[in-house]
Length: 308
Image (tube, rainbow, N blue to C red):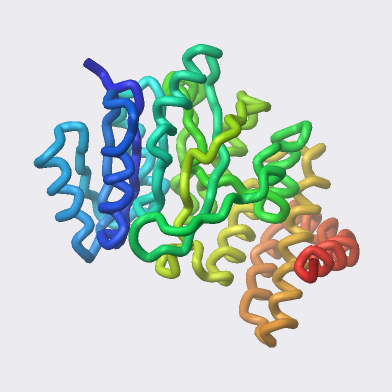
């Protein structure tokens, strides 16, 4: 019998936390799932941890590959997944024990392709400890989801990938996969691709997942985040419509403003070099010029937001 939900976990050097992610799956209130763990060239005991679960429970599957990034790993998982629904989970995060059941039941009953839940975050270095709910207004998309993703993602809202559940047939029909040309913010790019075909994902009002504040994760460094944001904005510039340019320019302006605030606060110009990637073509320069024109407004708005 094919599983109802396929959980795809990319893992790179997260052996310390992987066990807790896998235990959160064993605690699920449905049994009709499979878990595909893609060990992305880990140099710690990640593969050994995954293999031990595979030996004890046939629902766990381990795939090993040379280090290629989470986009490649997730796509590999998608290529072998058999579930009706797809659930992504990072190796250091956790799922609510009711998430798979409640979300799949809701999507089946309402014939929904994409849904997402609320999320909480926690600082525990082990299992789930005290957690903090993200503000609910971050989870309620604006009237036009694509406009929000282009202009405000990472500024006023950001929703972890593990909040979402996708109908596998929906992803396959529209050939939606993670963009393997980018190694950061690939989730943002996927959401943009999804928004072309599903303009309003359904929000389920319960905490479905828990995001670990992990100092060893790839999102723990401001420099990495800023670089990832700028690379993604540069990457999507050639593929958006001319009518979306102002929205992308506003988002670029917000990023430049945040980099400027960070440079002033920490007396470092390291992140300012990311702006130079927009010197490569006339299209890049036009977007950068539009962003610079908007910069005074976005700088003040971001400064107020940080102070508040």
